Length: 115
Image (cartoon, helix red, strand yellow):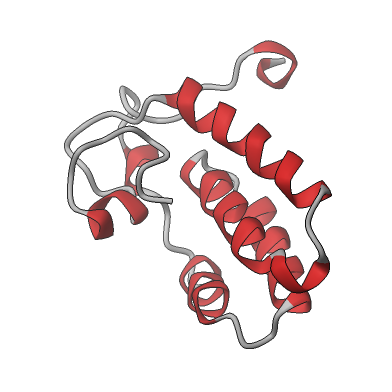
């Protein structure tokens, strides 16, 4: 997951969106499409990691509510998946992805999402 934004910084900083570098948003969007495709072809018992990665992408893009929904799906698929549980607690506490605190690094929707 930490490789998705294309930033060469420590994994924990990338996952928490606390980097000095700017994410390659087109790469992030492509990864989300790939993960959604993988999810549609995975069995429920193997979907928690995929759904958690999709949740992180949504959180990075400033969509905390949508991220929470994906984490709930991940926990439904595997209630013992710790990364989903910890991520849901983090996002549920109101933590905002650091990239969204800087207008030059924040995600800007394009296409139909921008309207």
